[in-house]
Length: 429
Image (cartoon, rainbow, N blue to C red):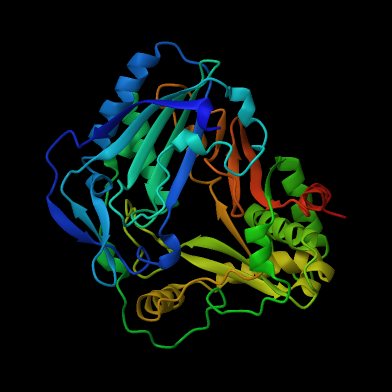
């Protein structure tokens, strides 16, 4: 793959106007150990004319976007326990590249290997505290005239919702077409709003609890080749899953598409791995807390404003009690999260350095509600939305031109991939 993408130019993009020279503290949620990586978005666009002017427009728009989002042009560092951003207008990185092999059609299915598309974001930041820019953008021109736009965002600085809001501004500036929503939007740091505060009761947090590894789970995922998978669930299939979960349910609860789909993916994944029946397995997923804390976080807050929801059970119960049981576990995990729960998590991660377990765990992230499929930088809307690398972390992705559909992408061990895809596409199996 290294020979298939050639970086032609690297430019440091600084804010177009003067920005504060300051040091900003990150919150306890921002500073969590498991967030010290880069969110890597990949957007693919159909062939365009006049690529030179589009490239120049992107650089100019990025420079302008870095004024309200000036921490993205700073550098993240360890401030002695918690993290901070040293803001001196150092700049973001913009790379322009060409591929002599890839076309838009190559993104209609899963990549052959986990890192097949790695070079579409050539700067792979291993240590986000080692002085790398928190924001890296790479524009790669494809062999058929299409374009791949990859964006890497340091997760310590922003969560998915916050980074998607930044991308919306970036896209609108690229088109010189700011919407009324964007004109009114504030871009707020305000990380002090999630500082630790007195907690009335110490709550249980299953996402942080360690469970026994009865099957060499961690070693298996480290040693066995992972195979990327991609399955689209259209509206009709999601409706059928909801009906199946409701028909088998003992309660009258209504289920969301996220609850039934994430439960179905979790069951299919766990069953395909042939784990011991008494192995505890967990589904971990992010829960937006902007409106769950009291008072609510202000609109425009772009820091990490989520906690990790945890649905947990044994493989035996996950398998035998069916989709309705798994769906209810996901729903209950969401319902547990209120203001007290969030404050308790903040306390746990700031004082005890609590970090999610990895044994028997499937981590799932919902990108299908971020609006990524609407991002038009002057190329039109994307024909593919996803991540640069397809890894063991499961992504729920939007499907361009199908507003009610969801694409499920995850890499699973090669010995389990056929079983996983069969179980995922046959809910009654």
